[in-house]
Length: 512
Ligand SMILES: [Zn+2]
Image 1: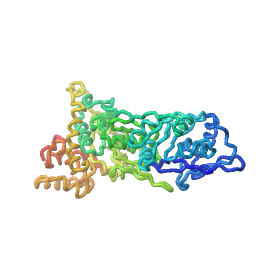
Image 2: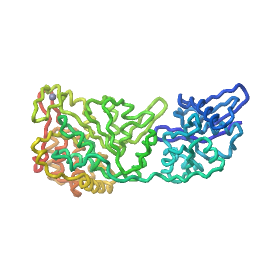
Image 3: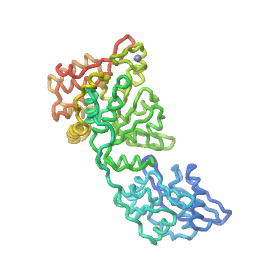
């Protein structure tokens, strides 16, 4: 007799239907799983046998073949344990085939029959709804996560025996509510505690308002990390649709599915591998930072494959990983904050110490960030160390909540146009950046003088648009362009001939 039970496999972030077929035939006792199982699925045999015995069921002394269809899709993880166990019981005549009909069943079995949570239940719930299945039977720990998808009956079970009672309608499934949405601000640094750093403060405000990527360069200890952390406190709260996207990534990684309005903040170590940062069969760090901030401290120390692999994600907000048989697509719409020293000894740019690096060494150091990557970072600022005297006589600073309000208003203007400014390019960008004759002539002169690339030119227009949005002004004026040009400090890198980074103070540029 052949029985069928519905389950689902996880391919990247998406769930795809899998049918668990069990055949019980006369012959030498054995338990075989076919259908491209990986090692963790193949080990299901032993878990299922023990769990069945320890839950009070008779040992199966016949030849069992389990097929996970479709056969050409690689199955991984112990998520099929419960479906296999129920299929075995149905094949053995201990469960009516009608009982499992139209149910999607997921869960890992412990040896004593208890159920353990599995990854990607959120996507599986969405699939169950799409397929019109009558219920989704999941381990208790996954129930709240599954309930985030409306229109699917979620049956939570603690162990194998309770799963059977639910399927036989001998027990009413417990009502499951989706987790309450947590609101409020992250514990962490507040802009009110950041003394001075006018350029840095302004840069993170512009980055937050337009979603622009940001490069902070400066000597160690000048406050780059603090600025990056403050950026996440001035971003507006997640919209509900965005929170679902963030929850899907956590679910696929098997992390607790947070259901809050806080934007993610990820700070991977510079030793991270390309697969860890960009993703492989599972989402990487850049997808964990989706809709939030990815902070790469000492960005030059990261592997080149990591940095270059990020280029498409920086532009499109998505990443595609191609493996032997599969193409994994992950969301990766984050704001990058990269921090770097200006030279290998770290002292260059510090007014109190003398850097001993040669211009060539400095050029090589900053050259670790390739031109194409730098071009994709709209805001590039040099952060200076604060003199001790300024720290002592510091006045109270503007708080994160008041900056966040300005950012919210600027983002609202952009929502009216359909895209965040950081995503604008080509004709779409030209259509929203309206320049008068005078501004146009000024920009043309600046481009000639600075010899900027086409991408840098577009970055200036995007940033100028955001600066004008922060003022609430539909026209982009010369002062907006000046500020945007000042935010391209690293376009002119130190050269081997002894040139240097141009440090343009914003205030001096207000009037051309
Ligand atoms: Zn140096």
